[in-house]
Length: 160
Image (tube, rainbow, N blue to C red):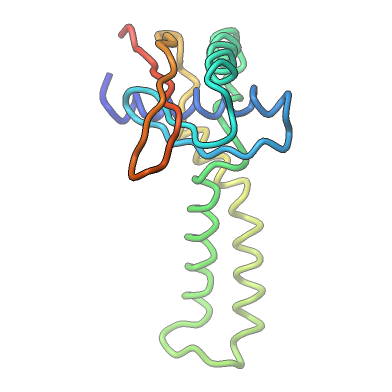
């Protein structure tokens, strides 16, 4: 399996883990980042909680809950929103922005923002995540530090 496919699958497991953690604490604020070896989580979560949630998420995904790979607060949503609204503004304002075009720009960027949410979810589903985790195994949680920021890394091993 190539590196990008590992990241896509780990990204899906990351989202599923956040879904599981959020079930017991809906106000939980976490930041996650997938990589080729698993995913990192920054936030107020104990390592035991994270390990239990990651294992439960993997089990649920393997039992048919692949929809857990998509999360509404993913960075893909933000990138999609930023890209579509910037393009809408650029198209409306062109090379010579004028105040008289501002109402049109507001309408265009608002419509783009509405379109961004479902499009971002589809981009996650088909591009940035994958629910194909049948060969994945939870391998542990480790404390890490990068540039003074402490976080947890969930290690995932792939048997493919």
